[in-house]
Image (tube, rainbow, N blue to C red; front, side, top):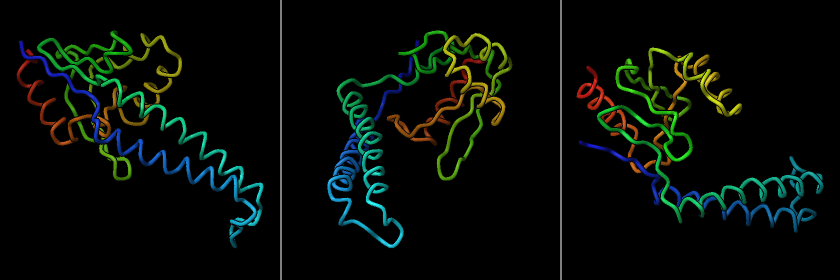
Length: 176
């Protein structure tokens, strides 16, 4: 039995770590030296301090999440003869059998490519989602893109083209 497991990319996570660290440092500098950073667009030191605080909070969260992801290699996707398990570490109910999959398509949002999993019973997946936030996300995906499942290879070890190739090959191989 061939089982393909796709994990998070250490290289991409490390780049996120460096970038978020730089933005935290910039945010701290903005907060500490707001009076001297007046420009023609931002004249208010209070606004500059607010932007600094928001930068530290948001990118501090990104920094901590990237450290956590560097320490523990996150499993994103499992592909085997039975189907696809999307996000297997969080929810084991997101196992999609090959006979429920109609195909895969590409979606491009700005410069980011995504993979849509076209399934024949999207209402089933939306109704069975127990987490309210994830349920709203799947409804949003289905309403706007025609599929409740949308995969991005941005933080995976595999790039978008390879992911599409692997998914399509396995669909041909295992679907009835």
